[in-house]
Amino acid sequence: MKRKIITFILPIAVALFYSTTVAAQEQPDDLTLYQGGEAYEVKSYTQTFKSDTPKNVILLIGDGMGVAHLFAGLTANRGNLFIENCKHIGFSKTASSNRYVTDSAAGGTAISTGKKTYNGAIGVDPDKNPMKTILEEASEKGLATGLVSTSSITHATPASFIAHQPSRSMEEEIAADFLKTDIDVFIGGGYDFFAKREDGRNLVDELVRKGYTVERELSKIENYNGKKLAGLTAPKGNPRVSERGNMLPVSTRAAINVLKQNKKGFFLMVEGSFIDSGGHANNTVQVVEEVLDFDQAVGKALEFAAENGETLVIVTADHETGGMTVNDGSFETGMVKGAFTSTGHTGVMVPIFSYGPGASEFIGIMENTDIYGKMRELLVK
Ligand code: MG
Ligand code: ZN
Image (cartoon, rainbow, N blue to C red; front, side):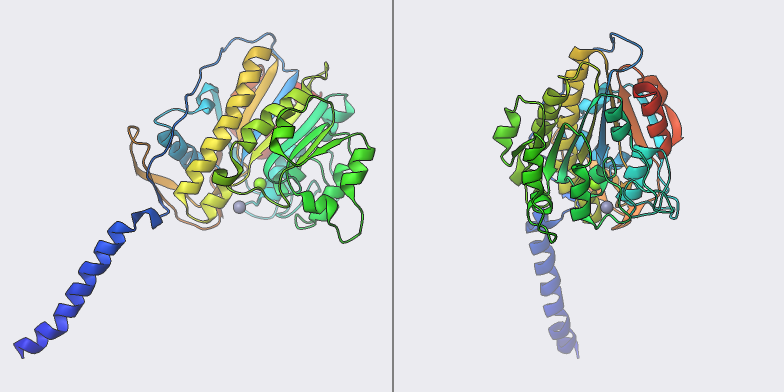
């Protein structure tokens, strides 16, 4: 009897020992654990500005970026982010017109137009009527305008600022909407939605005829010094940070170089798209990499704003993704242990950070639609 029990239990004990040892060795596969990586230096910028109202607005949206995502990045960078230069802080309530939990289309449209709409809507109201966006209003007032994104430039967030379509999935129609505007610069992925289309139109040729320089290489985008630039750096979305490098910070600076030539001012929206993907995948490593990349794009915006003195920088999110929290970390090594409650978006409010003339408007708890109202009041009233 005794021997029977031992022969039964022994293999189980061995198997258990083996599996826990192997699991310990394979820790890099634990995607909720970021083990620490390279950090960058964060600069402090002036808090005195030339005027009370901004001539330029740079809005940076971290898709899916809640407080935990930001704090994961802050921990990974040994306790500091560029975003900390923003001394005015608020929160945004993100619900859409038909859901407690928004998607990026309704979230982007709320920020770009000041109206809540249904999930999936791009620049249209709940009855699918087009609504003018802050980018279009700025353009009509003679300001320069731009969009930068790590995803396809036709993806929900950037699309919400320039296109009017009943569904975010209509990316070829969204690409065609770019041609209906006077946007000065846009940089992101999505080449195929312009050049390889079902309707046979070649929007790249059409852009060239409209006076745009169309570039597919980041080095050419970085050194561009003209006035109309379409940068399409990937067939659809750009790859993750390890493959795309500093595409977002470089493109942010390149867009500013185009836009600052307009003496009346400019509106620029920059999106860090894949913080959201990290949240969906419950992947702390991706969240951290994408937040650090996004923060360095914020750094480029702040660097310009500090020297320019008439530029408002707003950093926010469209919604939270993953129900993320941070259970452990180290400011010494940059280690972050994330935890997640969802593989989708959540309804919690998201932070708004702002810097520059007009920044004091963006404090307290507000609706996502109020961000539009305040930007409009300051930039295109
Ligand atoms: Mg997005
Ligand atoms: Zn998402």
